Length: 310
Image (tube, rainbow, N blue to C red; front, side, top):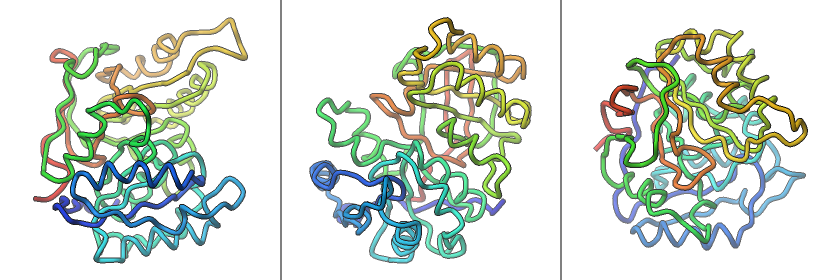
């Protein structure tokens, strides 16, 4: 595991690179969403992958990895924001230049399928990355103010403090825990198992979220993480939004809450659920790799420092 480094914060006038490391995206939607960043005083540079379609991917693996490497290498680009997720980041992990990324630390931002890159970059480059709303989220008709504020925090060092002022939080296992935040999309975390990019949860606060997965599928993935020791090794568990994860194929089903109790609660680690982090509105950004404290007694998740350098 590479030593942790932070990217620098953005300043007004800085250039943000937008690219698609996974599925292709509607270019017009990207251009419309870019205006939100421009209103914050940022310059936007749209990558070539936004105009490519290779099956369901935004270009070949070499094209997508090449553009991501190039954006890290370009000193004029101060942050990289993923346009969308979908599928495909696991295909480019072997093609990234992690020495280059470590030598040119900058903000890297996204969620969902981007989870695989969060895990890979943390392990081999040591860079703090951000699990946050992607560019297409800024183009939604009903844009929550807190979602926009996530981006504004990149212009100033701020410390994440999540309380029930944002959303109700439920305690599954009582307690307090400290450690760096890691994790992301449950499906993608499971896909790292057995690879060089496998998520390390030892002594960490493990965050999970997902979308469009029935309870029996969530059950299977949690069971796999349990057998891999990911819950037993973690210091604490943070459960985010599981959007549209309702029974469909199997009408007689456990609830998600029951599945969480089957696989997570027995580990005995402090566990909070209900975080509006993931495929939801608002979608609160989280710096991966930054130390934090969670408390079920205070219903609190608080980072100990900003995710960016001043």
